[in-house]
Structure formats: C-alpha cells, structure tokens
Length: 319
Length: 102
Image (tube, helix red, strand yellow):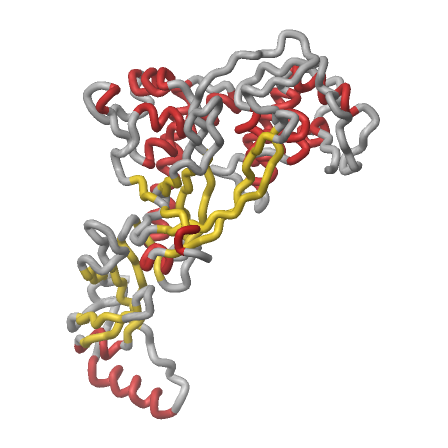
C-alpha cells in the first residue's frame, strides 16, 4: 500500500491552519465538482480531495495521520504498525461507509467499523446499537439499446468488510445486475440490500445507480422519447414516400413522409420510443439531403429543374 | 453466469420514496428533510411527512444541496439556489441534445 500525502493533495503546508485547509479544500472542491467540472478526471480528483479533507479537517484524524506519517514520502510503500491508533480516539460518524468511497490507505488507517471497538484507547465508545446500513450511490453508463431491450451489466464495487481485528478492509465485489427495460436517463435503479452492511444486526443499505446514456451515433433520448434525424432525398420529401426507420433493437418500422415535407419538419410516431408505461414517442426530424452534382448527368438534371421549376427559396423569406 | 446470480434492479419511479428512504439515501436525519421541505427548498410532495413521496429527481436535488451545504458551509438557501441553477443547466443541455447540438 502506498503512502498518501494528504497535504500535497490539498496543496497546503504541513503546519497549515484549519482555516487554510478549509480554504484549500473549497477551492479544489469548486474546481473538481462533478456537476460542473470539464476536467477529464474530475470525479477521481474530487474523491482524492474529499479523502484528504476528511482526514485533515478532523483534528483527531489529522493528529493520528501526522504521528504515523512522519518520515514517509508520497507513493512510498506503507504499512501501519499494529495498534498504531491505540492512543487516538475517533469519534467521527460512519467511518466504514466513508471508507468505501476512499482509498485502501484511508480504509487501513481510519476504516474501523462501529460496534467493534479495539482495546487500548481511552474512552472508546462501547455502545452497541442497531442501525440500517447506509445507501451507496454510483453512476452507470448505458447504451440506448440497453434501455430499449433491458440488459445485464457487470458492476464493480468497493465494499468494506470487518476483519478479525475489527478494522474495515475494502473488498472489490462484482455484481451482475439486470437493467430493466425502459429505463430513462437520470432515473435511479435500486438494488435492495447491496449498500453498506447494517450495524448490530440492522439491515444492509441499498445500492442506488443513477443512469446515464452514452452518446449514440443516431439516437438521442429525452425522457422516454427517442429522437432521430431522418435523411431523405429531395424527391422523397417533395412527393411524399414511405421510408423504413431502423430502431435500436435492429428492427425497423415504416414511416410515411407527407408530400412537401421540408428539412427540419418533425414527425412523431406515438408509442415507438423507449418502452414503458406509457412508452415514449419516436420523434423524427426530416433532413433533406441533396444528391451531389458530380457527374454531367446530375448537373443536367439540376439545370433542368432550375430552368423548369423557376423556384426562388428566398422569395418568401426576403433574404 | 447463473441466472440466480443476477441481481434484478428496480426502477425508482416518480413519487416513490418515503421520508425515511430519502433521508437514508442522503445519510441525513429525517429532520434535515423536514426542515428543507418546510423552508420550501425541497418540494413538498404530499400533505404530511408520513404521506410524502419523493421522486428520483428530488433525491438527486437533496444530495446536491447536501454536498454544497457540507463542502462549502453554504446556507441551505444558497445550496438550493445552486441546485436550481444546476437543474436549469440540465434542462438547457437536454434541449441542446434534443436539437442535436450536444
């Protein structure tokens, strides 16, 4: 396990005041906040910043970290001596659940679980209580095809487990999860009992997955509505036609394009969006695509149209 | 993979989370939710707390507000304002996506 320099993560000196640490944390929290940050690794950086802050903003944890980390360099191999924390009391809540979102280094140092106090310290909390485990949150990236058909996805989670000495260690657990058909972007999928373990016999928490869609080459999703551009030839748009439209499951349906459909015209096929109750709609946007005038024959056809149609597209708009 | 190894995910539909479920999902006491609903910072989804039902969207909003309150010591009203702006941003992004511009 590598030693982590939390002071370096926050960019503060080892003798920084609580106020310096708070300021440094807020500055970085703003920079890497996953809601807004454009930086590619914002989520991972935010986790590191949160972890460093969880230790350095807590006087008890900071004192223990300082005592233990003296002489270590970032990245150096690190193993804490047994019972190193015997003289420190940690009264902060939820260290096991907290540890699940942080590094092995943090879990090793501070991931002691509730209800299993270790000897040696003064005034350690011995109280037993029963509490339901915390819910965990994660994001899951799906393709629109997955929402259309339903899918089974593998998810890796870091789960705290109590070892023989009462310390939380992080295990990586892989779950196969059935994603229900018709899931929408932003919707939550609940996996009952897959969150933090409960305390003192309490039920485990749930795992809540927030659904996001990967960009798709053809389709866009808005709620359960599916949006797709429909390229048509000028004669298909002008004369009207019936055109096959491919759906995410590989099937297709036939859509009637009314005569005179201009580029940008929207056509709605009710109930043919993502499945659900009610299902979404399929919204098609007509895009008239010009054939290239790259042969003598094609040029002649365009010239014939120009001569015989006498069409001025700017006549109505005045541009 | 055996079929019984696969966990079945349940979709959280609109208006489905009780006060206790929302509080637990945010790791806050129910009082935090009650106060924020009382101040109009979270929607009041029903008559009394026992009949409240929150949506996935409410949960995402509550968690955003909580982060801003904790990370920046933000006043609840300011955290709610940030959540409002983020919701607006999401709405704008959704419109860009609809228009094929994002």
